[in-house]
Image (cartoon, rainbow, N blue to C red):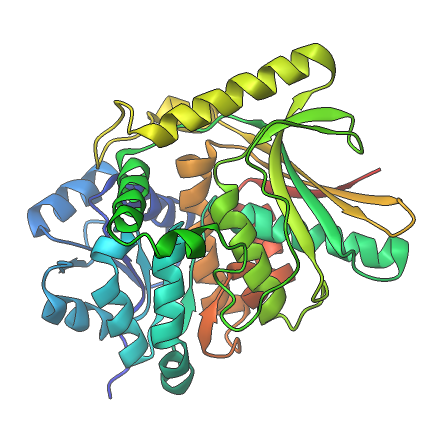
Length: 394
C-alpha cells in the first residue's frame, strides 16, 4: 500500500465548525512544510470558496466526499493518516466514515457529544480498530476535553498533596460565555429523536458509565436540580454538558487503568454564588434548562453559528476540586480565551490531531479519549497554541 498523501484531512470543511478548523490550520501552521493537509466536503466549488475566504494557500488540496456515498469516504480515508470530522450529528452522518477509518487503520478525531452513538461505535469497532492500527479519538472539543484534562490535572495535584489520587472530584463551571451553532442544535435533536424511537435507550443515556462497557462504578450524583454545595459555599445549577463530560471522564479513568480508583465519583455543576441571590440564580438557570429540553427553541440552523466577534469575546473558567478522606482539597482551574464551543473547540481538535501525529505517535490503536491517549503532551500543546491555561489553585 502506498504512503498516504496527507497527514490530516478536515472533513466537513464547508460547514460552520469545519471552516473554523481549516482556518486554524491554515493560520497556525502556515509555512509548515512538514504538515500536509487537505479540505474535504460535498462540493468542490464550495470548498474552493471556503479555502479562499479563510486565506488558505491556493494549492490547498480539495477532496470531494459525501456522507451518503461510502465509496467517496473510503477514497478520502485512503489518502490520509488522519481525519478530523466535523460532520454531525454523528449518529446520522458519522457511521460510515468511522467504519472506513477503522477498516483502513486511519486515525480519526471528532467533536462528538452523543453518548448513545459513541457506545454503539465502541462495541462495534474497538476490537477491529486495535487490529488495524486505527486510533479513534472522540470528543476533542469543549465536549469534553477541558473537563477530562481538568480532572487529570487536579488528580496530579491530589497525588502531590494527599499521596494518592482522590476518589471524589467535583467539576464546577465558574464562568462561561457559550454560543450555540445549528450543528449543536441538530445533534441535540437527533439524540432526542433516537431515544423517543427506542425508549430502552433512555436508561443507557442516563447511565454515567455508558461509555465503559463491562464496568459499572458506584452511584453518581444526579446533578439535575439546584443544590447548595456547602463544601464550596455556593449554590449550583445543573450543567447540560455533564451528560457527555462525566461519561468521558469515567471512560478515561478506565482506559488509563483506573488511576482514580474503581470507586471514583465525579459530577459537574454550574456555580451560581452564595446566599439567596445564588439560590435564585440556580433556580432560574435550572428552569431555563428544563424549558429547553421540552422542545427546540428558535435558534441557528445547521451551518450557522456565532460571529467572529462573539467567538473571540467568549471565554470559560472551570474549577476542579479533589477531596481527600480527611476533607482537604486540591484545586485546579482550566480556562479558555475564546467562545468554548467554536473559537476554542476548533483549536482543540486541531491540536489533538497534531499531537497524536507528532508528539505521541506510539499511542496504541483503539478507541480513546484525548486525555487518556495524550495526557501531559496534549496539555502542553493546548497551552502553547490553543489559548488554554491549566493552573493549580490554593
